[in-house]
Length: 90
Image (cartoon, rainbow, N blue to C red; front, side, top):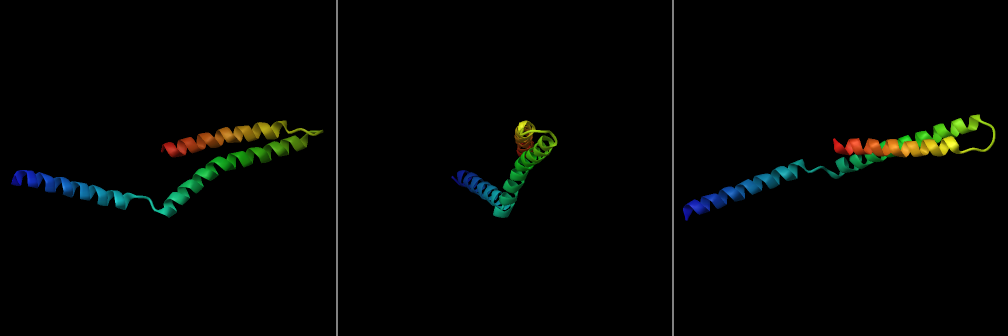
């Protein structure tokens, strides 16, 4: 019976060490907030850049056109999604 008791104590100690290590390695609220903020910037900045660049190009031509603006906003969405995908994957 003492052999079973030793095994049980060893398993409990191992589980306690695992819990302590998991508690130490858990990200803080500030770290999680920064992570979400970076994800937002990685997605939003290409979209805004595409909208600004497209608006500027459309302004160079005569008449009312949003062709470049819409095209570059869509391209910004694609680039932003790829940025977020690669950032999360790492």
